[in-house]
Length: 523
Image (cartoon, rainbow, N blue to C red; front, side, top):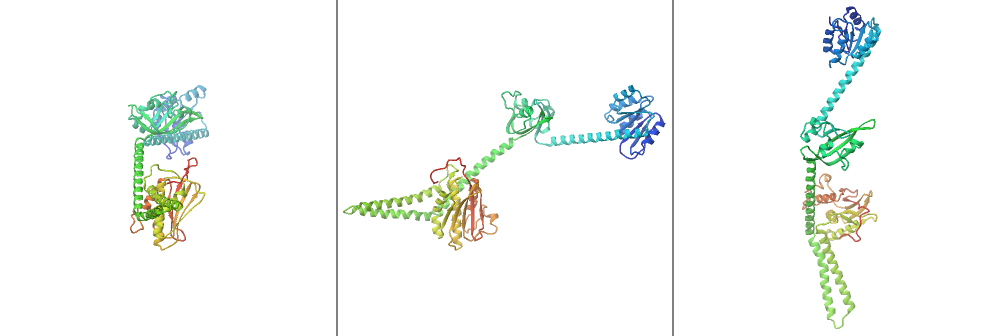
């Protein structure tokens, strides 16, 4: 007979005995303990029930006709579906040989007949709980293994598990895809021979070798690995040691093909070079445009010393035509001609310096000299707008590392804008140009005016290309200034002073102390 005697789906207990009275006693003993009870009176039925329900505990009588308990136990342990159940033998045989045989066949415990109810209850409870915990643990391990497999299969990076000698004991699908092989084909191969053509570390600093043998984690980029067909590909890899009780058992290697990434980086570098070239060309065009705007003023600046030279030459001619040569007066006249020629030469030199294309890029420059020369450049605009330019540079300001022509272009553009804004506002306050050291890391140059100020939405638009507040402006000046300052590793921005007007500023990195500084002012 067979019977399901409990509806609570907790531990399942299978009672197997050919004696109906024994089955009844066992059933009465366990029925109110919350178990699901199954009953079988012979071996074949016991195996069928066990196969169907996988009980946690089997209380199994040894002495049964036909198939005895030993054979039932042996067949239970031979089946994967029932092997984990705890077999507790029930027998009147109390000799040592019977017990040893039962344990050798996989039995978990032994209860002698006649059995005590409390003993049966205690032993069943213990074995049922142990089997339940083991099954939960196995289920959780299977779930973790399944999750781990799904994760490893989903990862786009290649993953290897290696022994200390570099033998591949695990490879995920991504690793196989990079090599055009199935993961199973990689297992058993030597990592170093497969990807680097050698296992000999005597004269080779092989990647991952230190991890496998010495437990040293590695991270390298742009390492060339080879495929079985001889082709190569660049990779970035990380290797971590597998340790147990501080003993190195091998390594886990995660790697990815960076061929496309390197190609993109090369394309990006080329694009950056093109941007730099175009920025320099635009800056040069802007300088030429500025010179065009200032041409009339510079023509006047040059014409003055040339006119003076012409007048002094006529004076010199009269001196030489006199009956008696006044050598002292002639000498003074020649000195004045030389001074005016030098004045004209300085104006022309500044113009040539400003419009030329820079050849060497960044260099060490003295901020005070650069700003003073820029102020002289702006004298024409200062007279035109009838606004003065005041220069204030702290003595503590160190030299900076930058492109002098481009920095001067930015400073001149900001000063000219400040002069125009001040004139538009009808103010006579001078434009103030200052420089100071900030946090020991950079020099901050400020251009402050008392003009009309900046619009409320200036933060969002002012440095954008083609945005301008001037009626005839093209909106290129400030956008170009930002690009030029960013190329110097600096920042540019503006503030609204409490007393009105506007303050534009830019920063430049301090030159390294070890860099040799020039003895003369930058031209």
